[in-house]
Length: 276
Image (cartoon, rainbow, N blue to C red; front, top):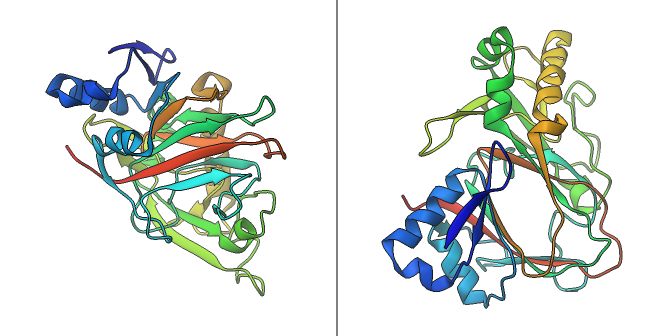
């Protein structure tokens, strides 16, 4: 197993990978180091369910979904699966930022992909924090983001939009909302780096400045301009057999288009706690 950079600032590609590599301390260490880069890509895989499980449990404990299983399918052809991500386009976000516990990692295994399948874009939240002007970096380091998630819109598969408390002081009738407050800048485990933890999908406002603050909104927009700049984003176009694992604390991700009727199936695992 060997690695090459995925971009010039984050992520790696694992080449010549075999599940047997994880039988050794060296192989386990390589995978964990790759994860700490923010984004891991392994192409051309043909994994059984147990092999994907083995790969991801090398990183940590698996999250258990409401179904009771430690996996779910993100699919438009597996009829019994109704993942909350649906088929809609998704803005940049950290998974679970609207909850108290934020899982540190996610893995997708591409089982079915069509030429029209939308890619996933990834933004480097560590580099973006470093790229902020000094005054902005110092200001945001002392703030907390008020994060929201419109569960009703997700279930109904509406096109995504940022839910701002300023626009909805009280949730409209029939809207179920999840909210959580987190530091706007977080420490990334293992690396000692700091990363932005505000997003265009989930952050309504800065808690200290309040939902109606023009200053807070201007600050958020200036951060988003750096975070989602072209040179800070990698866009991945899937092929069957791709395995992609990302650090949910040092990257954000977005689905850049709506899923059409052509088959698209991923097996998804989430790491709820890191093992090292």
